[in-house]
Structures are given as structure tokens and as C-alpha cells.
Length: 434
Image (tube, rainbow, N blue to C red; front, side, top):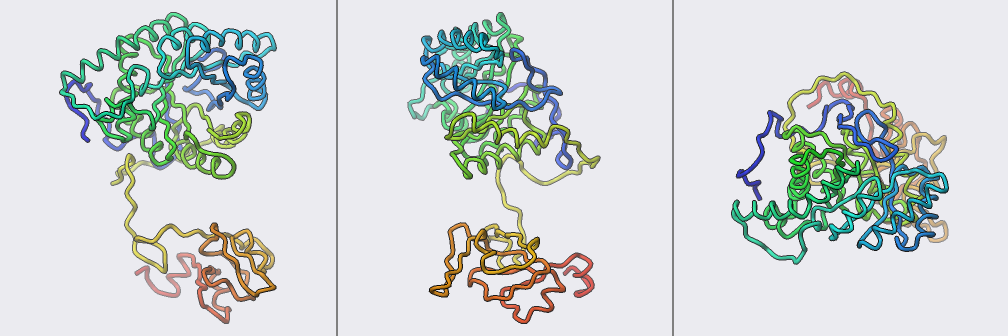
């Protein structure tokens, strides 16, 4: 679906595909500073780590105890759900208890569906998070038709619901996160833009433009999805739209419902890590289905590598890519690599002094001596890189081996064994790169 042109803001001269400071060298995207209680987000400040409680907000003691565990693990902002005015009011008690214990970490009220709870919480805690998909709209899974005029009437209706919260935040010095969730886009947005990263971006931009009209700027933005690919595309598109409208608000990064254990950590690292490498992100939450304090070390490991990260002076050149949608690069086939083949997994065993059948166990291959058979796990790799090590045993039928050139030349059997060459070695043996 195309973005409607009517009532669109005047765009500055930003390339259609630009979304970060430099495509070829690490450079953090410079955002404006937003104060959240005792800390600041964005600007030159470190990338902040945060998490969210899982207790019943009305259970003050349990919420305080869990918050303390999170803070002592390194959590810099504690988010607490406030689904109604009752929970929002109890945030005052939770905040007081934490302060009495010597903790002044900023609290964030998480709001869905209830503007009155948000308005109350904004007078108590340092930051409120609102979801533009359900703050002023209801989800009925209806397909709606809008003209430009009728759509503008809907924007005016949202402004009436949202403006009181903005006014309170300005008066109280409370920060706000406008946090879009891919899974809770409103019927209005879905009908206008579809279930797309563009729909996620426009959902937030509608609220953000109201804030700018009211001269309120203590804002952090997020574009969360359980699918890391959708999440990455949405954040990139959001920055592109902000650039076009001369905005640079800080970004909160996260993959929703990432899961637990290794899977949850990998899923979070893929989405969050890719954006951090783009230079995007000012605060991070790793969302695991574990105790919230378990999220903190994972988030810290992701952000710590950027504490003193320096880029290389590489000049940008034009590139023909669309960073907001997925298109696989065209390649030619070599063995089972390239073109339509799935990406192949290579396990590096070159550091071992000697490679034995037992060495393949971490690679997903387990040799049973009793039945003289290889058992192959679901996570088995496609290739192992043996380097200069010979393999003096019969390899599993689904496995191939990569050797350094000199070692490969000495191999008696070359069945499913292939050489790895430097560019110089290839030219020496073939005379050209064709």
C-alpha cells in the first residue's frame, strides 16, 4: 500500500534509502538527549539497559523485590505495567519503597488502552510508555475505508485523546516512549498501510507529530516485533522518516517475545545487534521468558562492545539496495552454495590439534561404535573447516570438509573434501578469477 500524499509534511532532501550515519563504517546516529529522572538517554550518553517486571503491580512487596534484583543486576530503567488507574496509583508506593531502600533508578509505566491511567502515572514516575496501536483506537479486526478527509478526522480524534497526556508530561518533566508493536497495529493503520513496517512507522509518527505541534520533545521511540526482520526494517524506516522530517529522537531497541534459553538470546542478538551495528539504538531491552534480571547480562553483552567503538574513515558510495525490505543478493552456484540454496553452516575445527570422530559431536554428528553408524542431529552443520588437519576416518554421508590447499592436495580421498584458497593461490593455480 502506498503512503498517501495528502497532508504529508514537507520532506527535506534525504535519500530514499538513507537510515544511518554511514553504511560502511560504524558511526552512532546522533540523537537528542532525553532526561529520564536521574539518567539521560541519547546524545553522547551510553546505551542504556532496561527490563520489565513480571509481578502483579498491586503486589507491592513482590514488585519492589523483583525491581531490586533487576537493579542490582545492572538494570538502568525499570518498567512496570499499569493497565488501570489502580495500578498506576500504586506506582507511587512502589517508588517510595525503592527510594527508602536507596534506589533512585527511573520507573517507567507501561500503558495499554487506558489514557486515564497514563495521565495519572505521568505525575508519579519518570517515564510513561504508550502504544499508539491501542491508546486511542480499538482492535476489532475490521477493514475500514477512509478518504483523506475522513482520515484527518481520525487524526484529530487521536489528538483529543492524546494531548492531555502530552500536557501533563510537559508540566511534570516526564519522558515518554511511543512504542509501536507489530502485533497490535490498529484497524485504522492496517486499513491504510497494511500489516507492514510502514504501518508501524506511521502509527508512531502520527503521535510524534502531535508532540512536536505541542512543543514536547522528551520522547523515545520503539518499533518492536517478534520477527527480527520486520523489527529491523521498521526501525530503519523510522529513522529514514525522522531524517526527512528533521527529527532525531532516541531509539529503544527490542525484539518482543524472543523466548528463552539459547533461542531467545540468538533472536535478540540478531535483531538488536544488527541495528546497533548500524549505529542505531540508545537503550535496549532483551525480552526473555525468564526472570527479568536474567535479561540484563544479555543486554549488557550486546551493548558493551559499543562503549568505545570507533569507526574507520571509509567514504560512502552509492549502493543499489533497499534496506527496508528483504531481497536476496543474486549469486552463482558453487557446489551447494549460492543462488536458491539455503545458507550453509560451517563449523570451524581448525584450532584442534587432532580431529577425531568425537570432535564432530558439537557439530551435530554422533558416532555410535556399537552399530557403526553416525547419528545426525537437527542442528548438524553442512561443512567443517579442518584447516591444516587431516581427517583420518570416514566422514558422515551428509557432511563435507574444507581443507587448506596444501593439506587438501595431500588427501588420499577427496570425496566431499574441498580446498580453501587465498586469492593469490587461486590466481597461481587458475590464472584468472573466471
